[in-house]
Length: 216
View 1 (cartoon, one colour):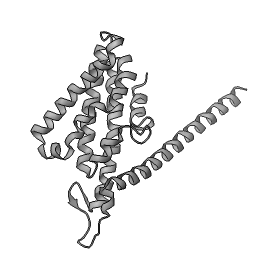
View 2 (view 1 turned 45 degrees about the vertical axis):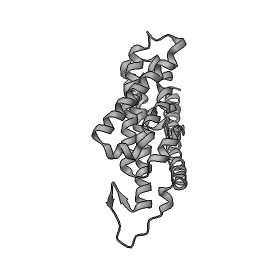
View 3 (view 1 turned 60 degrees about the vertical axis):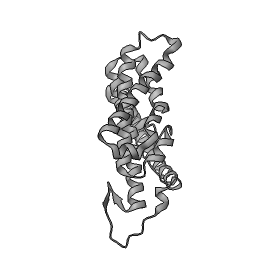
View 4 (view 1 turned 90 degrees about the horizontal axis):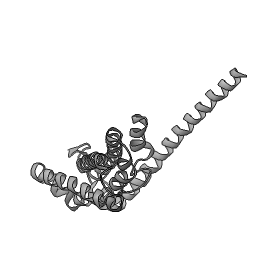
């Protein structure tokens, strides 16, 4: 198993937001600014990597009959740790993200990776998978938060970008605007991804044809 392929799948090919379109509820709610999107992404990375580590290490000791409840307990433990850490050290972010940090427990992506990957693979690939999936989520949450803040507030990470005469499009701070931007971003992301994969397939076919020609 190539670790680079595992990481690429999580980051690009199986991106939890742009490709699989799961975990959108919290994403659309918290990405009203770039810092919120970044903080949510970091929280998801911590929980995904941590839960993958524990599930991978315990995969041979957890009976199949209780594996899902056991995975949820592991995930909930890491979510609680992240929630308590943010409450203690970043109270402003904790207040901004609110209930959506505890809701990471029910994020389909995290439970899915624990079930589909970490419970069937050794430690290192599970860490790489969790990191790739978490960074893929962060890529989506940060980029969406940046766009919404720039267009809807005229700033980036709280720093004003335009002059006093700039009129922000407030709709993009609202849920409707987030749906519009996310749809556009998903379309662009998947168009570029498919075009790149098609070009790679074409290159492989050309190499194979050249090999067969030289062999003949």
